[in-house]
Length: 187
Image (tube, rainbow, N blue to C red; front, top):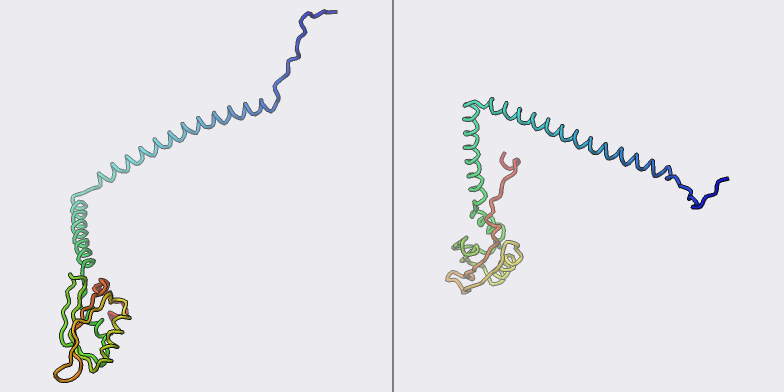
């Protein structure tokens, strides 16, 4: 019989799960490194393909293609100029449509002045058949969305009868926006 002076502890073996996790981790690390090099290879290959394609395109450029490109750029600049002109275009004739639509049947306009630079200021001189017609005309203007402010400057009896008056109307800038007809209106 053997007598042991120093008792030996039993060595415990690592759990199998830890061994399995270790091998799975090593396998994933190897896959990630291999994937990195594979993706790097694919990127390099596609980069070379792009360079070859660009060189082919540059070789295909002929003077005719360059002239065509210059012509297209010239037309593009012209179209942009017309676009700028169209967008900055104002249609002061919309004022006539506005007056036609909003004038009371017993009111006649004698004179008007329109200045688009002083916040779309419209000065009107008119004759109303009576004071109630003038009042109704003012109510029509007040209910109009394009009218921002109305000032009645003068009111007096006319020489031939009726009521003569002067108005100053501040209009919204939208009144000058051109109306683009639809295709049905063009025919």
